[in-house]
Image (cartoon, rainbow, N blue to C red):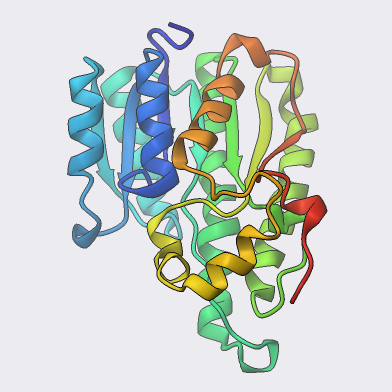
Length: 255
């Protein structure tokens, strides 16, 4: 197993892509720090899956927009496992609105979760990596929309574009410490965030026509890349975005 004995913190890992990544890392031997935001977002499914694989875990309720909660989560993980080897910044939100209708509240929510949360979670984890001299891995779950325009989701695109530049900067700044930093950019993935789309045959058909592989992605399509980037197989990869989109990015057009 490629991650035997490693410890991974995966934010937003009670469902969807985050849950798939947590399980994928556990399948390769990693112990998992499971993160969820609120009691309505309970991580029991993830816990059961990780436990069934024989891995240890700790579940931490933390809102990644709040620095004190981030720090408490990181401290709890280090206290339990001694160190953190892998961080997956997965927690994210999006909000549909015409640009001229975007509220300050919704803009702040998207930017705070997607960009601020990833920034300060990485900062807290990196401090522990440096203190423990861990050659760590930071993997951000970005989006094809770090590059691809997405009308009516401008705040979301701005947050993911910011994540791209954050990743590139940190890849250079943290390389002397043996810490690699990369992004995964999923396209359309079958997760709870896309429930409305999955239940709208007309919109789903239009989207599938933009995807050369003619299907939506699944969480395991993303988790496989996360496992690779977390492993020794990716020792010489840093500052990169890997697109997991079935070819969508280079075949997309607005209807």
